[in-house]
Length: 120
Picture 1 (tube, rainbow, N blue to C red):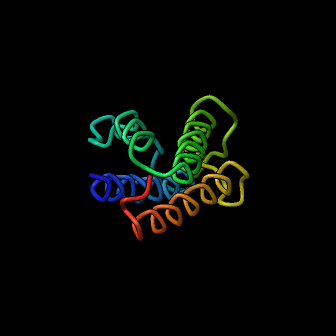
Picture 2 (picture 1 turned 90 degrees about the vertical axis):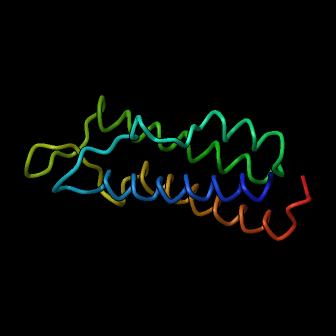
Picture 3 (picture 1 turned 30 degrees about the horizontal axis):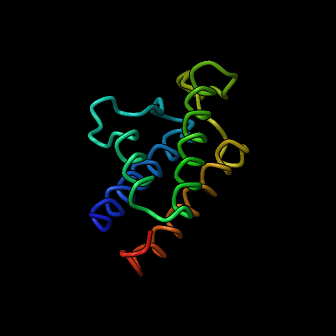
C-alpha cells in the first residue's frame, strides 16, 4: 500500500510541476487545478498521515500550501498580466520558488521512503 501511495504522491508532484510551469507562463494558460483531477489531495494526505514517515508529511503540506497561495495570487492578488491579459507569476517570485523548494523536498523524501517502504 505504501509503494502505491508514494507513486500516487509522486504523480501528484508531476502534476504540481506542470501547474508551476503554467503559473509562470506569460503567454498562455490560466493556472488552476483541474477539477476533474482524480488525485484528491485530502485522500492522499490522509493516507500519508497513516502510512508514511513524518518526513514526508511536512513537504507534502508545504507544497499544498504553496500551491494554494499561488492559485490565490493568480486569481485574487496582483499577478503580472501577459500579452493576452492572462495572469502569471515570474519564475523568481517567492511564491514560485517556495513551491519549487517544497516540491523538490517532497520528491527527495519520497525517494528516501521508497528505499524502506516498511518504515513508518
